[in-house]
Image (cartoon, rainbow, N blue to C red):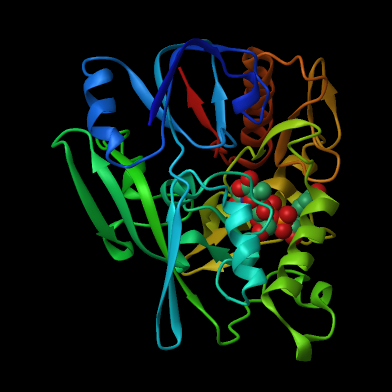
Length: 339
Ligand code: EPU
């Protein structure tokens, strides 16, 4: 079934809670509906949205926004591997909750990430040492150009840190995700190497996916604002990956008494953007309706619920400029800016 609403207010469907409208809001509950939807938006500007948890609308959207309500899921088992084929409109966190209830390993570290299944496969969401790509087996889509259904194995999707081929400029909005198949396991396969996740899990001899899920949720709640209570789009910037000489400069600038957190990545080094932002004095500061979250400076928040996208952009620019001046590193936003 397809439903369409004209001049739809998007405040409730973007977690930043920016008060803007789109010209047409179109929802579809079955993959086959996309054949008709393609006709409905032919020649017009359009985009897909999930839960709107990684977007910053820069103003009203003069086009159609497509939202999946494909909500069915099925599980098949092949010996030790369970394949879960999930509709793109299912909330990732409720899906993960169900997997954990059923004792299935694979997605538990991604607990608590806002967003829907389809978007997770586009964005390659990640947290606590796991990325969606580690668990995705295949992604089914409707090709808006060829008007046909296609299926990609995960290794065809060009996955990398917060990246997939679906984000390539020339492919943007061409493939509309209908189903994502995850590869899960009933055999224990915990991934606890990130930060203090293992400690948070307590007695690791009696681990279940639900124990890990609860530990991840507790860690997230201790650092990240709840999107139900305060508008944000999670991490606003990506963690920069820099050459070793740039990292050596950062160490020198930080001074001998400061340990610079980092992760070695072959001949490059990843530095937490949160640390850079904190070093530049932004942690916990507010600027009118917007602010930098006091527990995790990677998150820009809509403090009053009345922030405009201009205020967010001004703060973004201020942070980027200050870090460039101090450390010579240019942060790039993780959050997608929509015109
Ligand atoms: N740090 C600080 N100050 C702070 C917080 C963190 O200096 O106030 C430094 C610390 O050195 C800390 C390091 O940053 O060890 C990493 O912090 P954290 O574990 O919170 O992770 P992150 O790199 O800041 C990433 C993801 C988050 C995800 C967490 C946990 C990105 C852009 N963000 O943040 O994802 O929840 O890891 O795995 O990769 C999101 O994408 O919206 C998101 C929340």
